[in-house]
Length: 329
Image (cartoon, rainbow, N blue to C red; front, side):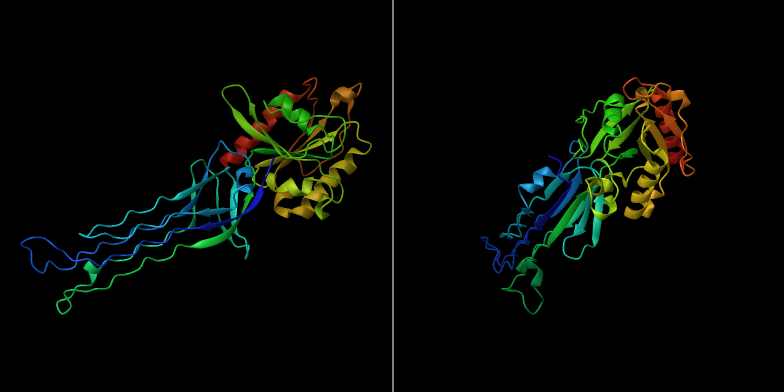
């Protein structure tokens, strides 16, 4: 099951209290205060784990609590600091305050950490409160409470290129043809119910990540269909690929529909570099005679067939070249 949004409660541990104690040793009269400090409470962190790709684990446990630090001991012994709680999430996870919506941060690269709730500082023992006029203090400092927050986690998959198109445009077929991903493929609309990722491997050890999201229909920006819910997963891509079948009744209208729905959802997303892949070329008698309508905003047009592999290699090389240029800039 693909889960990309959860709400969690995180509570950091409280600091341990300091201690009131006095040095008691043979032949050492009036040894003075020796109460130790309390240990710090555990904090709660988020860490990016590239082995994960969904937030499913956090649907079963919504409350995460770190332990408190131990109190100080006699003989100036400092209490043990509690261990931190580390929550592994997929790279690309965004964190917001669940009540205010304020962005707290995000984890993108493998191993990147983000502090969610800081543990409380341990209190001071009575050894710190001795003065020339008060050499036997009996008071100590209690530990501070740890932070507690309600946070919302939102996953935005990280890919180099994203595939967009209406239902049954051939997105899943293309992904399965050029990567090791195995998305569900069938002859009915909305076969893809969740985003899929695959790694395209080219010669000379070159590779890039391709993302396929559910089909976009007219009115997607208003919540119709499934594409709107998952469009956030192509927000981090460097470029987009619009997939339109060559046998579409009105190819120009299909392209205009995708551009319009994307622009309404996010102007920044619509402004990303994009190309057009005219798919299912194996279903027409003469793919080379296909008259592609003008797409002035696209950096290229490619007539391809994921089944017969017609034009696929040139298409992938063009994507790689554009990605290399985007990375360089």
